[in-house]
Amino acid sequence: MKPPRTIQISLPATGEEEWQAVREPLMTGWLTQGPKVAAFEKAFAERHQVKHALAATSCTTALHLILAAMDIGPGDEVIVPAFTWVATANVVLYCGATPVLADVDRSSFNLDPQDVARKVGPRTKAIIAVHLFGLCADIDAIRAAAPGIPIVEDAACAAGSGYRGKPAGALGTAAAFSFHPRKSITTGEGGMVTTDDGALAERCNQLRNHGASISEEQRHHGPRPYLLPEFNLLGFNYRMTDLQGAVGLVQLKRLDEFIDERQRWADFYRAELSAIPWLRMPSTPAGSRHGWQSFVCYVDPDRAPMPRNALMEKLQERGISTRPGTHAVHMLGYYRDRFGYSPDDLPGARDCDRHSMSIPLHNRMSEADYGYIVDALKEMA
Image 1 (cartoon, rainbow, N blue to C red):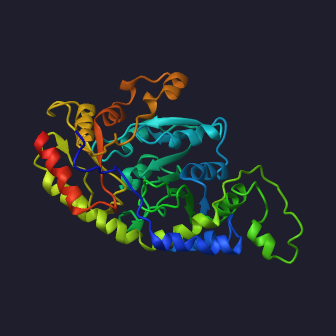
Image 2 (cartoon, rainbow, N blue to C red):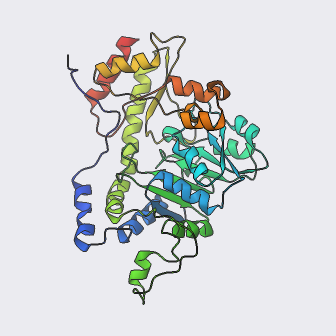
Image 3 (cartoon, one colour):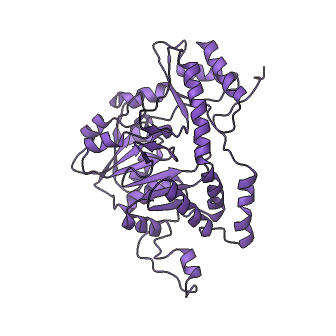
């Protein structure tokens, strides 16, 4: 029997204004990285209180740019949380370095600073701190656990999030954001590097454009547009298009509106579902602004009426899309086979992999949608 409604795990909140925004690049013919990307970068830097923002094709390529600009390579180690999207660890391998997986806290889903301290070694060149699901990692505790080690923020989920009065993206040496459609704001695909380090920003700027000494826009508007630039670095093609930049400008104007709406419904979920003894609600520590990219619960395996996967199947039958929060990197085939991990090596990540559950929370849901999800979970309780 067909369920009475279908609620997607996520839908981007786009409309007429984004549609109209792409007209100018299409009409002018400036489709690749140009004035719209530059305007998006400037606005993003101002919103996140950093000196430099550089757009890229994805958060993955933004992270890769940062590590490459930091000269991380063979023989180096980078500490990465074991519970994160696989790209966080993959970018370390792209540089020829070694990802060292650290465990996560089961309540926040973020890096466990105590395990970070245990994993620091003489070859540690950076720590990637993921702000998972929009909750900033405990940067002060991580910094105390590894004094002097640069912190790179994987802020894929954290546009507009904050930690102790500072925005995500302004907490470490550099940060990378995502504009994938499952994020709070989107450009389809796309990413952003943020940093206050001018030299690092300039190196990222060159690396994203094949290593060119100046950008295409600078060359075309300069006195000698007919001359090609110098290429003194081995770079990549990680440039965002002006079509995406135009959409990003519109989306960024609505970022805080989107987060405020998600906050209201996150509060609704927590109020309505907190009485279910086997379903632990996500929390927001004092001084943090949660970006609520996802609303991820933890299903207590000892008290729940059925395993997490069976619960997700029952919800799917009712038209409610769910997902695991993300995955434990050490339990994925490539990392298991290459590095010899077993699930119990990182028990926090293992448990989050098996028992986390994301339920729908996005800016295209109705009050009736939220009520329907709450009623379904209460019936299962």
